[in-house]
Length: 142
Image (cartoon, rainbow, N blue to C red; front, side):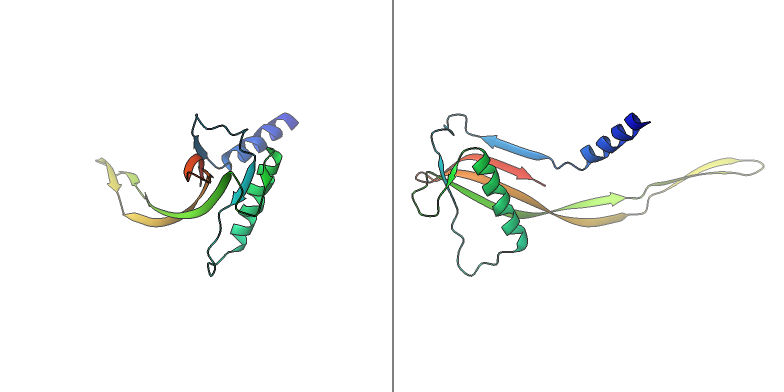
């Protein structure tokens, strides 16, 4: 019984996982470039709590990987992150029905148009070589 509960719970958690797509430049040497700075944010731009949480999460992961975060312009790598809005249309609603009377059997289908626009945010994180402004690593998550 415990095994069944554990399997059910783990399947539920796997369904909640976000799909992350990443790509990198195979010629880039990530071990050689150890100093990292975040992209300078323009003055006057609004920073929300989400951006603060993203910044802290990226900082933690970079430190775990052995990178040194610097504030001045001497970093070899620069990290950029942004949230891109995307929208998609979701349509649902096909209805089938079966009916019977004394003499006949019938089947009907009704397809009402139920469409709605869903807005999603995609987190895009990029690592860029600071001197050449060349993207060497990019990840996108929904």
